[in-house]
Image 1 (tube, rainbow, N blue to C red):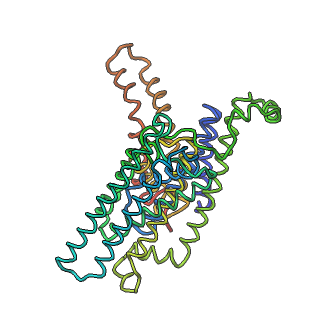
Image 2: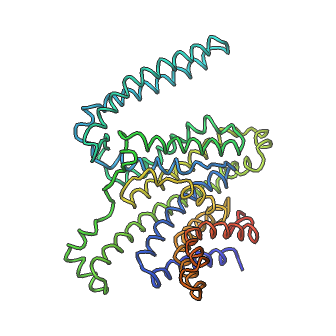
Image 3: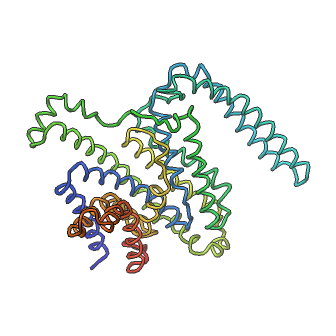
Length: 434
């Protein structure tokens, strides 16, 4: 079988699984899997850009995804009345002071020769800057968080269309990736993984505790949407007529239509990003990145700036993850910092890339759909399977209760099993790199 035929078969099987979910379970479930599969494929593209192109082991994916989610609040929500007057300018001034202190320390480090005096000067600048920052920043934070803390307590956003938050989420993630890359990309792969994981946890901790920014663990709900609300569709005479014409009740039809619109938006973003990443892969830049991945020493001997190229690809991959994070938050309609768990956004995405085929963009997309489908469906399917297997056991049986109570762990078991099977029979993934 040719590569094209095999790849077409893989995607046809995925499409059949999603359609089967619609016929057997519900079309709402099928469209949920489709939407999150599209977003998962985008995240897998970002990680594949870093690992498949450059061999960078980034396990801080959830930090960049969270920054994308934060962008939706800062861009699309309206400003909280009185927040800027109460303390917004003080917060902004405090942040400027912090940036100036860091830049001053960097300038001293570059301008002065290595000596004890340089160390003392850097420490003095950072110490003074820290206390000045806290003196200005803390008062502004307290003033903002005191404004209607039950419903707001944050500074709000720019009240712009939420679709603008998607590229802004990519920019926020790219900025964080630049800072992380400048400090951590000189490390070996295992130390880079530890550094990125630690910094991602810091980002999540800041989002959870800085209520002035996005309400922290109190969450931001009711985010604006790029698609119509179901209630508006249900009150539209033309939509009711069309829904009845297709044999749907208006409530179900409105829900399905909204999810279809989201799927269309997500598919457009995925196609654009896929074409861009594919063009990068086939360009001289892509060939250079793979040469650096395969042998850094020989690439550096040929005059390639390895660290600078690693920084480029690290920023690009993180930006894609930030865009995906903004899309997830838009789909959810709320920002929930506690939902950014490593299991959801790190382990799963890495499994998607490995199963699909590291270094192959089409494989990353396939892995995103396959793994997300099984992640969603394994638990209900496992419950049905165990119900059949234990149907002959007596009610109250300790073994039956234990087996039925283990259904929640079927997801992890299945992910591990899929990973083992793929690594055993197709070590380079379902669609391997050429």
